[in-house]
Image: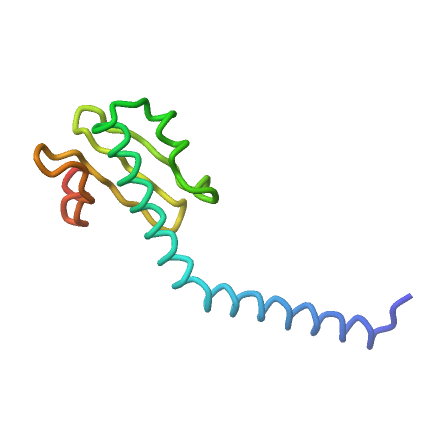
Length: 115
């Protein structure tokens, strides 16, 4: 059986571990957001080009993404010729096909206007 002093020490060790975990997450969050934003932009642009320039199906275009990009969710707005890419809770980007320009990433203002 644990005595009162052992329980108290265990409580403090668990509290210290919880604090370290929170500090680690807060420290890593900006980096995770930056990588997520880059991954979402890359995915939207590549899949948009595959879909609207290459003429392939959305599901087929997902195969063109690099390994490790499975966390990125893709959706299509076919009427707007737009691909939306999202990393849950961290980032989202959109790319749309523009005649003469190909697929371009949309600015934050453009994305807000269509949502």
